[in-house]
Length: 277
Image (cartoon, rainbow, N blue to C red):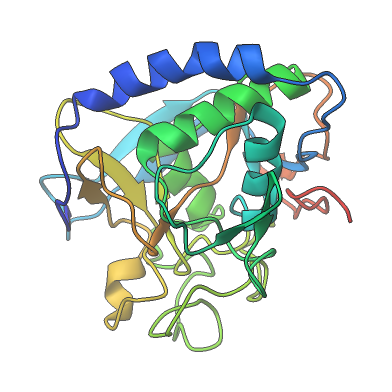
C-alpha cells in the first residue's frame, strides 16, 4: 500500500547522487575510519512477500533473492556525523535537528548520538552507502524493497510484524514524540532491530516517480501503518524527522559478522551495526 507523497521531482535523485560521488571520492582523508558494520547475513532463497491488503503496490508473490547482508541497526546520528567529517560535507537540511557544529566538525545534538539519523534526502543516503563502500571495500547500498521485507519478516511466514503476531506494545517505537535510540526494542528472529516503527527506512529506487521507504515511524498513531507489508513513497526532495535508512551489502565469503542461518533455519546475529565505542 502506497502511503505518502511529499516533496519535489524524483528524477533529480540520480543526478544529485552522481554529482556527489566525485566530491566524496575527492574528500576522503586517508586517516578517517568509517563506522565498522556488523552485518546480519540473509541467505539466498525463495521467499513469500506482499499481502492481499496491498494488492496494487505489494501483492502476494514469491521472490528469489541472492544472499545479502543487512545492518543490524539503522544508521545513527553518530555514524552520519563521522561520514560528514570524513568527507567535508554538510547535511542538506540547515540547520539540522540531529547535528550541531563544534568548530569545523559535525557532532550529534545532545542525546541523539544513538538515535537514527533523520531529515536526510534519499540521495544523501545513497552517497553515504557509496562512501562506506570505499572505506570498507564492500559494495554497500540501500536494500531493495524485496530484500527489506524478507529481512523484516524474520523468517516468519504471513505475519504482519517482525516478531510474528500480537500487540506492538513494548515491541516497537510508535505513537511517540520523537525517534527512540536504536536497539531499544527486541530484535526480530534474524537479530535485526527496529524493522517496525522508529523511522521509515529509505530503500533502493525501484521505478520512476516517488522513492520507497519501509517500516513505519515513531510518529504513526495507527500501528498498522508499521506492518511489514507496507510501503511508503516519498518525492526525491523529502526529508523530515520520520525518515532514515539502514545499509545493505552484497554478500561475500568473509563478512564482518556471523551468518544468521540458512534457508532451513535461522539464528540471530550478534554484531552491532554501529562501530563499538
